[in-house]
Amino acid sequence: MFLHLGGDTLVDKTDIVVILSLESAAGAQATKEFLTNAEHMVRIGEKGKEKSLIITTKHLYLSPISSYTLMKRSDSAEFPVTFE
Image 1: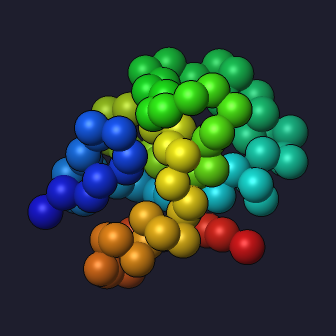
Image 2: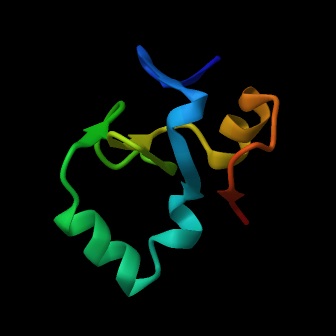
């Protein structure tokens, strides 16, 4: 089963490690450092429009779709999601 992250990007749900809300996670210094040093980052959509960070076994995705919406799309709670 796949999850649509926005644009033309689909990922296999079994590859997803976590989905984070950037609104809540971006305030933490550790998250800022992680994103600054991250490799294999895929930005979906326009810069500055990101709402969620999806960490998979292969890539990091910045999506313009909220973590809550992605969770609803997944139709499952098989991986951790954090949002406020």
